[in-house]
Image (cartoon, rainbow, N blue to C red; front, side, top):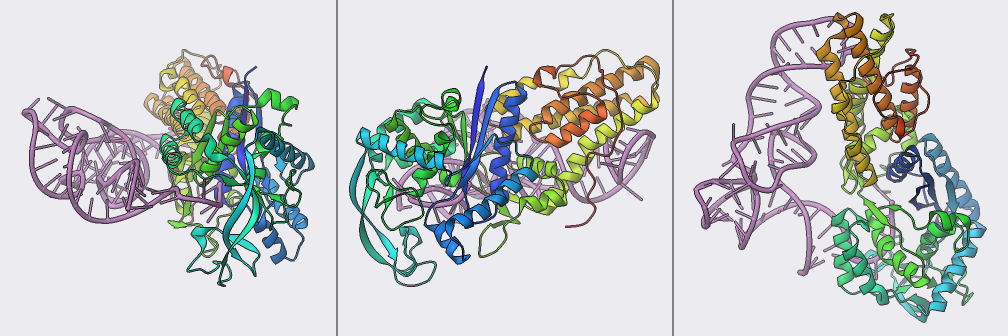
Length: 488
RNA sequence: GUCGGGGUAGUACAGCGGUAGUACGCCGCCCUCAUGAGGCGGAGGUCGCGAGUUCAAAUCUCGUCCCCGACACCA
C-alpha cells in the first residue's frame, strides 16, 4: 500500500495560534485527507515546539514555570485544531520524554560522524534580560526588548559542520526539482548556499530550558535542532515501526521564513546521521490582515477559531485556500471572506444543491438517463494538482465544475421538462453533486458530509468518483451555507 | 549593497511573438427550479516609461523609473 507522511512545523508556544498557523495546518490536513481518499496509508504529524529562551521568558512574565506555561498554551492549539476539523494522526510536544531521548541519540550520532566540534560562540548579549540578541535585531547597540545596552560576549559552544555539506546540498537542489516547492523559493536557498555558509552553533551554555547536550551536560541543545528532530522522533527513529513505514517524509509544509532551516540545516543533519532526505519541502507565503502585517504592536492577530465560530469552519478553510495560491502572499479580511461566502459558497455550491433537490422532490418517477456532463470535469487534472501540492488550483478546478453544472441546469431548464427528459437532467445533476461531495471532502469535510446526507449516499473514496446511475435516497435538508448580509 | 521576483480594466490576477482576457465590482435587459439566488448583454486598459529587433512586441533585447522578497528570530 502507498504511504503518505505529511508534517506541519511544530509551533512555538509563546502565544495562541493565529490565522497563519491555521493556514499551514489546513494545507497539511487537505493533503492528508486527499491521500486517505486515494486509499493510501497516511501519517499526519503536527505539534508544538516548547523549549528555548523565549518560552522561558514568556513563562516568567506570566509568573509560571516553563512546563506549567507550555502545558497551558498547548491546549489552545489542540482546541483550535479540533475546531478546524484537523485530522492529525499524532501531536508531538518537544517536552515529551521520548522526543528528548531521541534528540540526544540523534546528536550523539552526529558527534560520532565527527560533524560536531567545540568552539566559541560570540554574540550580542543583553545582561539584564539574560539573552543573546541576533545581530539583525540589535538597534544602535541597544536591546530591542528593554532598550538597554548590549555587549559582545563569548561563551563555549558546540558547532555543527554545516559548511561541509554545502556542495552536497547544492547538488540535491539542482538534481531534484521537487525538493523545494515553489521554484522561486528554491532559488533563494541556492543563492544563499552559493554565498558564505557558516557552521552552526547547536548548543548554548546560557540557556536552561531545553534538552541537555549529551556530550557535555553543561550545555543545552539549541532549540532549532531540538525542534527539527521532531519529524523523526515522532516516528521512533531509528528502529520504530512507524519510522520504517513512513520515513522519508513526503512533504514538510513550512512558512517561507523557516525554509532555510528545513531545506538546508535539516537535510545536512540528516545526511550526517545517514538518514534519507524528505522528498519535498513546501514553502508557503504570509498573510497580512486588512493590508497590514500581523504584529504584536498592532495587536491584529486574527483568531481562526473566532472566525470559524462566526462564519463556519468550512467557510474559513475554503477562503484560506482559494484566496491565496501556495507560495504567494495574500491578505485576510472579513469583507473578502464574506464576499467569497456569498458569491461562491452560497451562490455556486449551496444554490446548486438547493435547486437540484427541489426538483427531485417534486418529481415522483425514478431517476435515470445517459450521462452528458462528464466532459465538464477533469479528475486527472484535479488529482495531478493535488499530488503536486497545488491545492488552490485543484479547488478552482472543482469550482469550475460546480459552475458548469449550474450552467447545465440553467440551459436545460428542467423545471419546464417532464418524464424521461427531466429524469436525465436530474440523474446528471445528482451524479455531479455526488462526485463534487467526494472531491470536496479534503477541503471542506463537514460540507462534503452534509451534501452526502442530503443526497442519501454514504462515505465514498476516490474510486467512486465516476459518473453512472444515481442511487441515493434524497432527503432535502438545511442550506449548506447562509448568506451573510451584514456589511463589514 | 548582493541576489531574485514583479509593474496589464476600479480591485485581484492570467496571457509571455500574431485582432488585449478571467474573476469580483459597476450599468442595462431577461428569467423564476433555487438561499433577494440565476442568465444574457455592456461600459471600462496608450499592457510602468523610452529606444531597438521583427511583416508583427504585454510578449524578445537594451536602457530607465518604481514596488516587493531573500540575505541565518517569525505560519
